[in-house]
Image 1: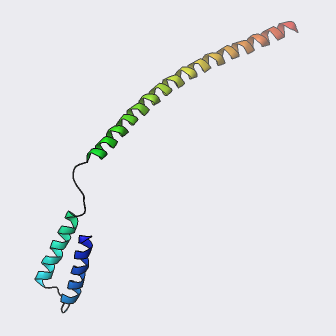
Image 2: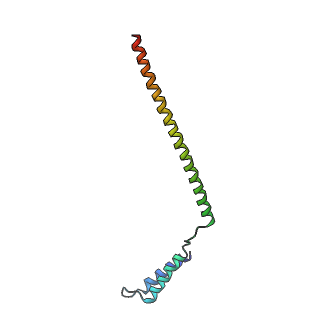
Image 3: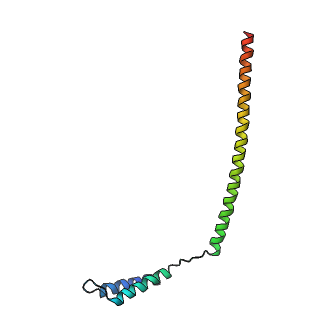
Length: 106
């Protein structure tokens, strides 16, 4: 692109203008201007475009939905764990009752 052409031209000019290891003041200014221009043409902006904003909103909606689903799954897990604990108590009671019955039979 334009920045590549300017960069190559500047590099060539710098190679040609360097005398005794020092660059002239004009070359320094030109290099600085080229550097500033290359950042300006880089296409970076401070603001998001409509497509990026839409993607952000979609991502936020998906995140909220996932968090809601996570909360409901955690609640279901707590319910199932409580049910399991109750059933384990019932099983332990049944095992004790079975042992008591077997001891009375013998």
